[in-house]
Image (tube, rainbow, N blue to C red):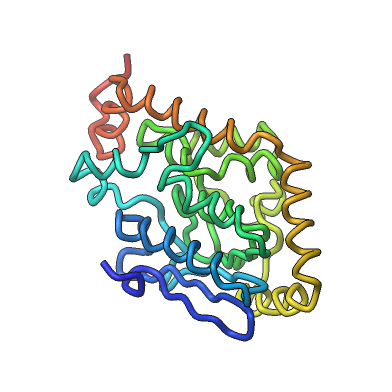
Length: 263
């Protein structure tokens, strides 16, 4: 599908305004959406006039995560998402998060409604996360018997204490915006997160682009020096889980069959 059918991209006075644009499906991630986000990141990277990026979601939610029925319908889709030619590089699934992190300009995520699973991983790719008060956030992959493998782990390590990260990842339960702020999972909470993001973007774009670029690279490397190693481990561990019996059990239990047991 065309880029504009999944992601809306506009350039406004050196700010790239990105909107996940699948509101009828709560911006759930199907294969065209993965491709559209990746293409959007690449398009922004080529535009030398961009100073700041703002990412938001259309409709009721920022992103509710993976479109399970769409992705699971065709096994080849999963393979396309996870395939990579070098362990430390990002596959397509990881690129929709880590790609924002690799941009040379600040990226602000505007969160509202549900920011779950893959949506949370995308949000972690931003440098700043501004949430509305009613936002709920979840690392939900464990409910489907898998681990988070979309490249959000480096940012998680930088910002969130180990026990809080484990609690969210193991339970898969959503947390409120207030709890997320306490965990340092979001930068701030605002009744009008888009307006707050525009205000921050206006400040950032007035700074030297060279300074912003170097600070972003320097601070990410100072806080987390192991991005490529983390990406490799995410993929390795996910492959181990995907071929296990318990992953299939988890999917069936998530679909409502509580009679089947784990081995």
